[in-house]
Length: 443
Image (cartoon, rainbow, N blue to C red; front, side, top):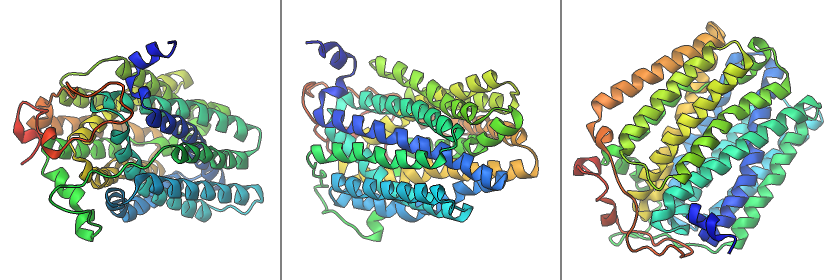
């Protein structure tokens, strides 16, 4: 009885399997956020170089670009739950190794780059499987709520993880952040062991194909679907210009003159704003005119980035980073909902893999660009010009993509049962009704 109001407000939690995965993933993401914050501080302390921080993005991008297509094809052809079990276990082992190298004083920048690339490669296999699994766990009309809840849990983890990392670094126990991340993977592994496997909904006209051609089919599907193509292009360009998280150690130590605890608070600021935006989105039954809302959210993301780069006061910087996180989350929730619900189940893994190249490639190249520009000029100049570039990109996309600007869809289903454990995957024809203009779906 007491759980009824919670389920009314967050109906995706009615699904036992989604609930277990959501809890386990929340714990694991907190550990990952700890490690990501710690690695940047660690690398800055070893090198003192903005370019060295930016190179982390290059190593991640190489791993993502190399493995994403294979990961997407695998997610559409194999048991997604089993893929997640294997990848999460291996990611935990890389965190253990990084902890031991740090504890015994054997860690080098090269070792950090290799282990970061290994983790990114494993994530390139895990992410298509995880994102493609969620639509099978909840009814269609609850999927936006599931995305919002996932975003909220990620942002709570983004507050808790970096804050704990800052405390541990401040106490001189950097290795413990890596070991805590390794332990956090046990939560998601336990959740995966407790849920059943969900078979992929096959295409009625073809069997699962693991060829190279099939791996690249996700890209072909995206560029035959203008709304998907423009949202991903917008995501890539905006994050390329505005991503500057790699420079946070420089802003904390050299510009704002704060210690590791202050650095942890700055890292958590984006997640504070993102969590507030996630709650806002989860509480709303629906958001109309999704295309226009995405464009405004990304423009606000660029404006908040400019404020972050220009600020010389800790609390103004913190507020600017909150605004960065909030605007990015609104855009992300809407983009992910559109992508997953207009994509047939048999194509979701490959579409997600192609999307990962955009979604993760943009920030990683952006961090590389930010680091190199900061090395040649200054960190504030790098961030401010990036925010300006983001706003210009939004204007160009708005002008070039009438499909995205006009896109509006009600994803609610009339006949789905609200109490079912998992949603019924819709056939391809069900995804062609969410726009006033058919050109926004397929060409």
